[in-house]
Structure formats: C-alpha cells, structure tokens
Image 1: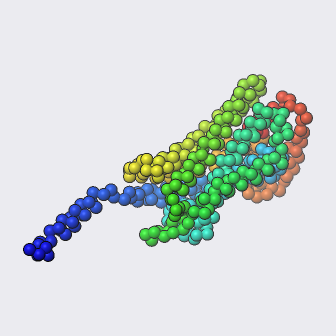
Image 2: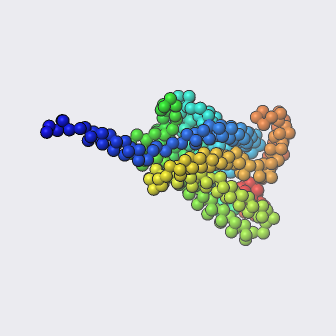
Length: 360
C-alpha cells in the first residue's frame, strides 16, 4: 500500500502532542498587578519626597552661603551633600510621571534624567561617607586635622568624589534608552550584548558602592570616635554618641532593605532563584524599599545640619529675617553675631568642644 493512502493520523498526533507540550511549558511571568500598584502609589510618594527634599536641601544651601560662608571642610561637604540630594530629587517628578503613565520626554531626557538620578544617588552616599571621615579626623586625630581639614582639601576631595560618582554612573548613561513595546514607551537600561552579565554587574555595583563600602567606613569611623569620646570627660559626649547612633541606624534602616532586595534581584538574574511569585513580590519590594531609600535624602538636612545648635540658630534667624525660605534676606546684620570665630593654635578642651559642635 502506498504510504499516502494511509490515514493522516501522524499529523494529527503531532499537532495534539505539540499543543499539550506548549500547554505544559511555564507561562510568562506577568506583572500587571505590580505596574498597577506603582501607577497608583508611586506618583504621590515621589511628589512628597520631591517637595520635602527640595525644601530642606535648598534651605541648607541658602544658610551655608548666607551664614557659614564655606569656611571649613565640613561646610564644603554639607554643601555638596545638599547639591547631591537636589540632583537626586529633581529627577523624581520625571519618574513620578513615568510611573503614572509612560515615558513621554524623549531619548535625550531619558539618558540625562537616568544619569542625573545615578550621579545624585552615588554622590550623596559618597559625601555621607566623607562626612564620617571628616568627623573621625576632627575627633580622633584632632591635631592632624588642623592641617588636613582645610577648605582647600575639602574642595579637592569633593571634586574627586564627583568624578568617581560620574564614572560610576556612566553605564546608566550609556545603556539607558527609550523604546516602545506593546504601545507603551519605556525608559530604562537595556544591555544588548551579555545582558545578564551587565545587569548583574550594575546591581552588584549598587550593593557595593551604595551599602557595603560606605557602611564599612561609617562603622570604622564612628566606632573609633566613640572609643575616643569614652576617654574624654566632656559634657557633650552623650549628645555626640546619640547623634552617631542616630546617623548609623537611620542609614541602615533606609538603605539596607533596598540593597537586600537588589541582591535578591541579582540572584533572580543569575537564575539562582526561579519563581514567578517571588519575582512579583520582589517587584513590589523594589518599589517600596526604593521609595523608603528616597526619603533618606529628605532626612540628610536634619541629620547633618539642623541637629547642630549653631545651625538651628541660623535657621531660626533665617526665617525671622526672610519673608520666605527661598528669598534673600534683607537684614544681614546677624552675620556680625557669628563672624567672631578665632582659630586656636593648639588642641585644647575648647577645641574639642568646637569639633563636637561643628563636626558632629
């Protein structure tokens, strides 16, 4: 019998077997619920962080220029930290609109905003680390700090820090792109070659530069400061230790959850963790912990600026003499009250008081 005369059961069996094989394959992990959650909650949260961060850090910059006049390394670091946070928060309105709708600002702004966000992120972390080192030098190596903690060295180290932050943000600038998929326009990093490797490296970069290195530096510096203060009979010691504890705990509370989630995301990219439900939960967690980390840039003015007694006086005076926080003061006679700062040629108890007051 000719094979063509046989019933075409083989073709039918093949069709059904392929159908059931396809039906048994794992379906794509959909994350529509995550997108709906982000569209509802992220825009108002980003707007709140933007307003608080813009207000607080703008006041810091205004007071530094009006009253402090950038006379020390600490002042330079405070200014750069405020500028870093301003860069960071200025990107949030774009991300807020993006979360609510889609990216409508074009490729050029996509790359620039993505890069500005990363530069603000890394530089802010780095200047927090530098301020820890500045405190360490002021308290633990007080005599050496008289030569090291100068305005010139502050400017030089700040320029180096900005250079490192810009270099660390280059992958975001190079690989961020604007593309349309299913009638929705996205702005995010896309790695065309070795995409998994590049994405894992970028996630690890956030973990290492955003948590591991600064946390190690902070723990070392502040542990040495506390040890030094324990051997010093000073009425401000308790207040200084409390502030150190506050700085470290807040840094851990606001940044550790985000970095833990980023690390788990790295394991997903490496296919160490493979579960659709887990991936969806991680997407929710990224949105929540990232917003929590954003809040830290609003707290920086409080942690590093407003808690000082002298700075509180500046803030009170600023709002007394100004019609608003962003209007130049008409009466600047208060400058004479704070200009009589006489440097000491030797390290004394009053020098320690000054270091605890200004550096902490």
